[in-house]
Amino acid sequence: MSHQYTQETAAQGVESALKLLEGRWKLVILFHLFGGNVLRFSDLERAIPAVSQKMLIQQLRQMEKDGIVRRIVHHQVPPKVEYSLTDWGQALCPALDALLTWAAQRESGDGPDRQPPRTGREQ
Image 1 (cartoon, rainbow, N blue to C red):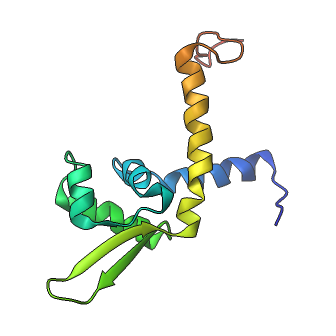
Image 2: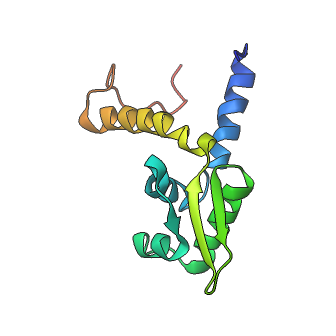
Protein backbone atom coordinates (compact mmCIF):
# COMPACT_ATOMS: atom_id res chain seq x y z
CA MET A 1 0.00 0.00 0.00
CA SER A 2 1.56 3.25 -1.14
CA HIS A 3 0.78 6.64 0.40
CA GLN A 4 1.13 10.01 -1.21
CA TYR A 5 2.54 12.36 1.40
CA THR A 6 2.96 16.08 1.49
CA GLN A 7 5.81 17.56 3.51
CA GLU A 8 3.35 18.23 6.33
CA THR A 9 1.71 14.79 6.39
CA ALA A 10 5.11 13.08 6.12
CA ALA A 11 6.39 15.09 9.09
CA GLN A 12 3.22 14.31 11.06
CA GLY A 13 3.53 10.60 10.26
CA VAL A 14 7.14 10.42 11.40
CA GLU A 15 6.32 12.42 14.52
CA SER A 16 3.50 9.98 15.36
CA ALA A 17 5.85 7.04 14.86
CA LEU A 18 8.50 8.59 17.10
CA LYS A 19 5.90 9.22 19.83
CA LEU A 20 5.31 5.45 19.96
CA LEU A 21 8.98 5.03 20.88
CA GLU A 22 9.14 7.86 23.44
CA GLY A 23 10.04 6.69 26.88
CA ARG A 24 13.32 6.14 28.65
CA TRP A 25 13.31 2.34 28.28
CA LYS A 26 11.25 1.50 25.20
CA LEU A 27 14.16 1.27 22.77
CA VAL A 28 16.19 -0.82 25.21
CA ILE A 29 13.23 -3.19 25.62
CA LEU A 30 12.86 -3.38 21.83
CA PHE A 31 16.49 -4.31 21.31
CA HIS A 32 16.22 -7.07 23.91
CA LEU A 33 13.16 -8.51 22.14
CA PHE A 34 14.36 -8.20 18.53
CA GLY A 35 15.08 -11.41 16.66
CA GLY A 36 12.12 -13.34 18.01
CA ASN A 37 13.25 -13.30 21.63
CA VAL A 38 10.58 -14.23 24.15
CA LEU A 39 11.48 -13.01 27.62
CA ARG A 40 9.82 -13.28 30.99
CA PHE A 41 9.33 -10.11 32.98
CA SER A 42 12.11 -11.19 35.35
CA ASP A 43 14.45 -11.73 32.36
CA LEU A 44 13.83 -8.15 31.24
CA GLU A 45 14.41 -6.89 34.79
CA ARG A 46 17.78 -8.67 34.89
CA ALA A 47 18.70 -7.51 31.38
CA ILE A 48 17.92 -3.87 32.22
CA PRO A 49 19.04 -3.47 35.84
CA ALA A 50 18.74 0.33 35.88
CA VAL A 51 14.97 0.30 35.25
CA SER A 52 12.55 0.19 38.17
CA GLN A 53 9.90 -2.50 38.24
CA LYS A 54 7.17 0.14 38.07
CA MET A 55 8.72 1.83 35.02
CA LEU A 56 9.30 -1.48 33.23
CA ILE A 57 5.65 -2.45 33.77
CA GLN A 58 4.51 0.98 32.56
CA GLN A 59 6.64 0.90 29.41
CA LEU A 60 5.63 -2.69 28.56
CA ARG A 61 1.93 -1.89 29.04
CA GLN A 62 2.20 1.14 26.76
CA MET A 63 4.04 -0.86 24.10
CA GLU A 64 1.41 -3.61 24.36
CA LYS A 65 -1.40 -1.04 24.01
CA ASP A 66 0.35 0.41 20.95
CA GLY A 67 0.62 -3.04 19.33
CA ILE A 68 4.41 -3.29 19.48
CA VAL A 69 4.74 -5.90 22.23
CA ARG A 70 2.72 -9.05 22.85
CA ARG A 71 2.08 -10.14 26.43
CA ILE A 72 1.64 -13.87 26.81
CA VAL A 73 0.11 -15.10 30.07
CA HIS A 74 0.58 -18.77 30.96
CA HIS A 75 -2.07 -19.72 33.50
CA GLN A 76 -0.07 -21.85 35.88
CA VAL A 77 1.15 -21.68 39.46
CA PRO A 78 3.17 -19.55 39.86
CA PRO A 79 1.85 -17.41 36.97
CA LYS A 80 4.23 -17.01 34.05
CA VAL A 81 4.14 -13.90 31.84
CA GLU A 82 6.30 -13.56 28.74
CA TYR A 83 6.85 -10.73 26.31
CA SER A 84 7.69 -10.79 22.63
CA LEU A 85 7.39 -8.40 19.73
CA THR A 86 4.40 -8.44 17.44
CA ASP A 87 5.17 -8.75 13.73
CA TRP A 88 4.64 -5.00 13.52
CA GLY A 89 7.07 -4.44 16.40
CA GLN A 90 9.66 -6.72 14.79
CA ALA A 91 9.28 -4.70 11.56
CA LEU A 92 10.87 -1.76 13.41
CA CYS A 93 14.25 -3.52 13.36
CA PRO A 94 15.37 -2.43 9.85
CA ALA A 95 14.21 1.16 10.47
CA LEU A 96 16.10 1.39 13.77
CA ASP A 97 19.14 -0.28 12.21
CA ALA A 98 19.10 2.35 9.45
CA LEU A 99 18.77 5.10 12.07
CA LEU A 100 21.70 3.64 14.02
CA THR A 101 23.83 3.53 10.86
CA TRP A 102 22.85 7.10 10.05
CA ALA A 103 23.81 8.28 13.56
CA ALA A 104 27.12 6.38 13.42
CA GLN A 105 28.06 8.29 10.25
CA ARG A 106 27.89 11.53 12.21
CA GLU A 107 29.90 10.08 15.07
CA SER A 108 32.63 8.91 12.70
CA GLY A 109 32.68 12.17 10.77
CA ASP A 110 31.59 10.37 7.59
CA GLY A 111 28.37 12.33 7.28
CA PRO A 112 27.89 14.21 4.02
CA ASP A 113 29.03 17.82 3.99
CA ARG A 114 30.25 17.69 7.58
CA GLN A 115 29.58 21.21 8.86
CA PRO A 116 28.73 22.67 12.24
CA PRO A 117 25.06 22.38 13.21
CA ARG A 118 22.85 25.25 12.10
CA THR A 119 21.38 27.50 14.74
CA GLY A 120 18.48 28.72 12.64
CA ARG A 121 19.87 32.25 12.71
CA GLU A 122 21.74 32.00 9.41
CA GLN A 123 20.38 34.16 6.62
